[in-house]
Image (cartoon, rainbow over all chains, first blue to last red; front, side, top):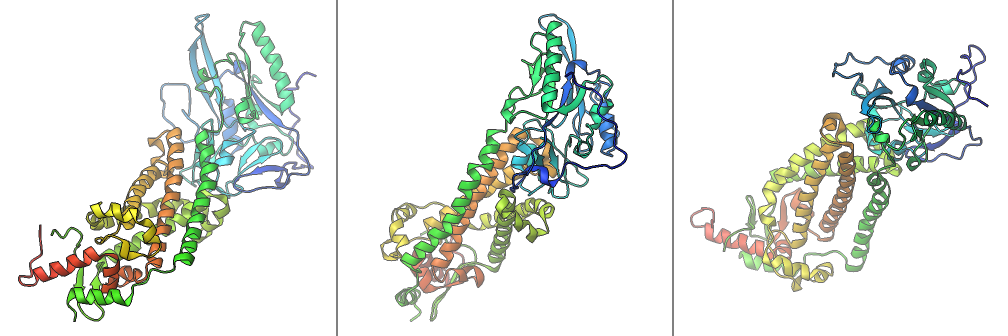
Length: 313
Length: 233
């Protein structure tokens, strides 16, 4: 069955919110009981070959999330803002790339933003219980009431996505419009995309749709066209169709094999357990030593010797 | 003999018992400011280090406040410890007797003082604590600044921040362990805590644990008495 681009119209009555606490499969710095039901995994598919760089998605994102980007600075490039900010959860990254085989100038426009990893590094690094959650449909969301603004999520993220607001000192990123998805809608960016470069559906549907697009691209000479769904982070719930999937780094440094940094794993793994064990062991060793050797007391003879030395008698 | 271990304010008062001035009021205030910061830093740091201790953030007014206060406490500790360092570094220089003292660690731990070499104001164990603290505090302030995102975020890459936070947590664990040794030694070796509360120890304590220092104080005092001038050299 071919993929339907159009999502159902927004509900206006009998709105049923079908995504909540009970669907959380992972919760930062805490554990959750296994949910009773498993939601179908969703995904956003961004077809870079279809993107015209209009930035409608950026506008829709600001609009839906009720954010206002500051008046920026013109750096002489199309990227605006030049990087993700606590307000702009998504930005178009423009790359002018000369294909060494065809000598064609290719304008690669990648919509950057949270990839909604199946194995989220941000969630792993977060020290605040419940500040980052993952739902069974794959959406990774921040709970700002619980965020403490430490920036550990930035260190955990393999894609350099979260940004800390200097206004309220909390971390912000794309929510995959979890509030829209909860009522059966797709993300605002997908809704706004005039070329259907951004589409949203179940992860299976998106993979099928991507396969058709890749076949089309390959038939038109892009022999390395492929899907970006990196296995190093367990796959992502935001995927790209890339004309040159063998070289993701040409798309504004999209990582080739992203995974949670081994430094982060060491910090959140061995260091934590060995560190706590050491901190617990030292007082125990002290107590045992005290029980065996007893206190080291100054004896009357020591005081006498001191008096003799100082000529006190 | 050069009075390398005698610091400003150290003095011996003959009597029954003999009383020895070990720390000036300034040194004690300096020490306790540092100590308070270290304890608060350990508590707030552990709260952010492991989810099982996150509840400790409540002591600081919640997670946001803990995240805000922790680095500032670190700054206060750094400067406070720096003053302690200036006061104490000279008496903590490694001396020939320190090696043989360490070689007798078994006798140290079994309270057999009589088998140990005479030591100055600090024994080798105290010196190890002093230098460990000094090095770890430098490591902690440097890595701490790298991960102090509110003010220093643009100065380093994310990869550098990852390394910084790993090193910061390992150094923090180490300094907490050193601190436990420091506190335990003060409790185990009776008569020590008075040095940092009232500033004084008994002559017997000084004779038993820091005989070389006591001898120097007595000799220095005797030598200085006629002129009142400080012994130099």
